[in-house]
Length: 565
Image (cartoon, rainbow, N blue to C red; front, side):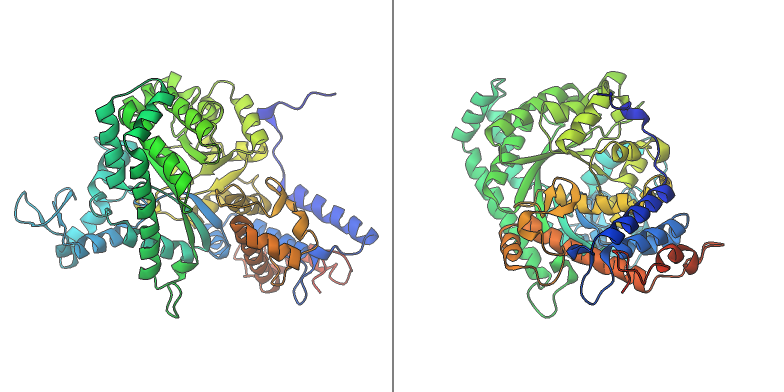
């Protein structure tokens, strides 16, 4: 056997050569074989032809940010698997929520406090509606984008200033979730995994663990926490999640004629633990999260959050990974995604850049990794990447967050490295309100910054967002992360068709994940059909509709998968 090529020196792919190869192979196969059942949808163009035309249009506009923005705004995006409920809400909406709660604010720094607003230099937040300067200042105080570091880095401002200031506004999570869902619907997002905690119950878990004190025997510590009542705390948190979802549905008027589009966005929750607290509190919060996910049909996984460069987060990092690994052994059905590798050279000592991602994968057993941008600084990074690819451990990549908080962007970002080496990637927003971004922008950045990344790569990212979600049920696809074959129950059906066979319908009825994936395939086919049948006119100099359509249009009379008939 010949050894595989070095992992980190794989050749860059040429989109033009790639698509030419796909086209020629498809053409040769078509001359020998009848069109596959899955290639045609009655009354519509060929799925493969539409995909090829969409790819060619994408190549024609990829150097034009405005046209890319319009393209990806319309593109179905599947799921956003990395979004914090408080950070996702835009600051203008925060002002409205604070005013509705009669909250007060210090005009000079944006610190929010409860009423009455009679002391400490506070004024009612609603004063911002009559004071344009105050209104704009509050927006600037409560977001990150456009912040110019002077005495504090953007990273520290994000964790130490912005979130504490808006915490009081977002204590009532229902209107926050409503705003998040409505915005997601506008962006053609059908599913969100929202990172949160039930604050009161987390506070009770902290108090309980502090009263017991830390026990390095994690099994015994867990038993003591359960005996002391953390299971009751988890049950209360489970009921609170159900109330949150129900109140959000009611506020959005779901199930009525006047339903908000946000009703079409399915939300599931990732219960968070904070990595910056004493170790007894961290373990109690993790245990609480595992217990909640074990009880709640709405909670689908556990995450750990907080500044990774924090002293406690750094010094206890290995211990935290051991805690997660232990709890995974006790609760094997509970999913785990972890913030790991949200670091950059200069932010922490070199030793803290050497193994965080690997520890999250190997020790904690994480199924997804959030950020993972410092992989090139880790020891044995090639082995870790191979391991992630082999285990199908997805990376959640929020480009704007990585750029604003860490200064990691463009060629310094490992996004193409993961793509080329078979690590699944999903694009995500992280904290779109505070960072003044959205999921569409992440796709624009991917397309504009990495010329080796193709439309098919980004379509794969979209499909990955459901394939590697923690939605319950089996996948529509026969191979993990491979989107060429469906499971046997649906093997004779066109994915996304409006009338699946009886066997396929039964399978879809048994799996929430598969139903979502079926819906996504329908939406992607509609999107590509629209591009193929009525493509926008590109403004790129020297590139017009004919130049990118001709290589496929000339074969439109042939009975092969690229037929437009």
